[in-house]
Image 1 (cartoon, rainbow, N blue to C red):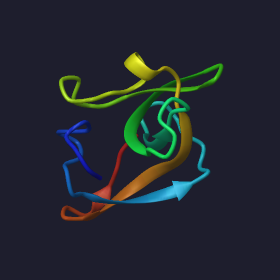
Image 2: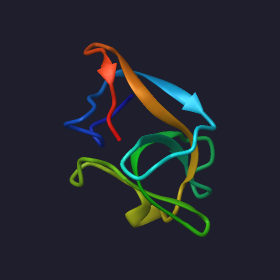
Image 3: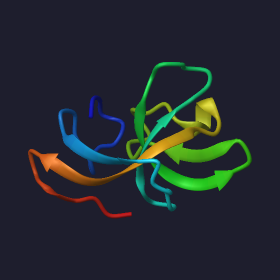
Image 4: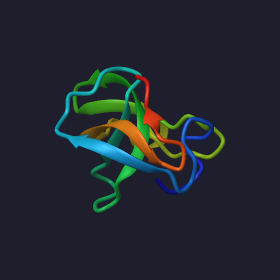
Length: 92
């Protein structure tokens, strides 16, 4: 995980375990991409599913670029665990 967009829940440098192709639920931390930013993967929180993808937001509204600017995102997987530096399950 890089950057401050998910603070305080996640921090820059956290190592997370992703379940690829897992079905997200609102509140889950997810791995996403946007058509307007090919090749870029981001970590965000799922808000709701809409036609065209998921609305996702960063937890830190002052330091995030998310669906409010880029529209619905494609979800690639769901994060279930932080492995380092504070191991533990991520809540949805």
